[in-house]
Amino acid sequence: MNEQQLLKTALPPVKELEPRRDLWPAMRHKIDEQTIRIPIWDWALIAAVLAWIAIFPKSALALLYHL
Amino acid sequence: MDVDGFEALFRDYQSEVYGWIMRIVRDRTAAEDLTVETFWRIWKARSRFDPKREFAPWARRIATNLALGHLRHRPREIALMIDPPAAPVADPAVTSDTLTKVERAFRELPPKLQAAATLALIEEQEYAAIADALGISVGGVKSRVFRAVRMLRKKLERAGIQP
Image (cartoon, rainbow over all chains, first blue to last red; front, side):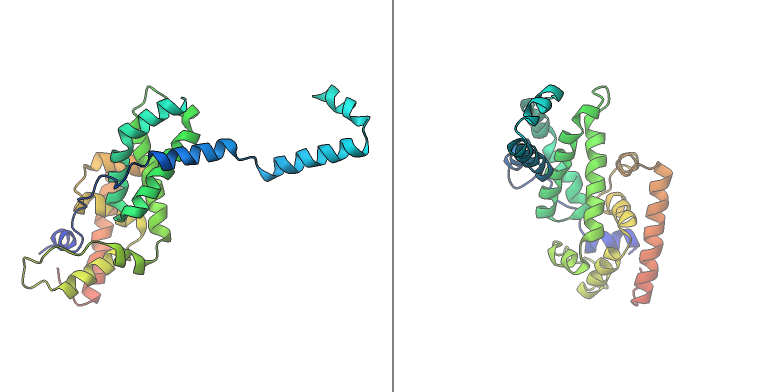
């Protein structure tokens, strides 16, 4: 028995070539999660801008000008 | 590409991608996770995909990279536990102990050699398809298979097995 035959006996070719379930729901969940998720740095930036406006209300106009 | 278009693509190719990954990792749960991960990467890179090129080879290459990463990080003990039991032995000289040693020796090969040898020698896939998936030449695949067999032979000889 050569190496290939020995290998094929020890590790037979895979027969289960179809997934056990539809994988689309898992994929869809991953896509939706990415669409909804806002990175923590974006939240931090929003909080910082709101705090800045609360402390210096007049700066809101300057901020709007730059937007 | 919108989500509906991507869903159609996913449904057309999920079995093909899953089957390819399964051939390399030989673990159903991991193959399912890696299939979703493959399509996730495709979704993120969809703007870079050239529609003039074939989709399947591109998907297979991404899937192969992920499968290789999985082999690199999978503990060998788990690999042995989840593999299907070996086929009934036709040759009486080959014991189940021998087959376990062969399997163990094979799992100790570097993942790149293991994947090339699995696809070429066990799954008997075309060398051109393997080369495309691994991103190397056909000669490169032959070289990896040759090195895998040589390393396997040495390991088996050390374990007292003469193929």
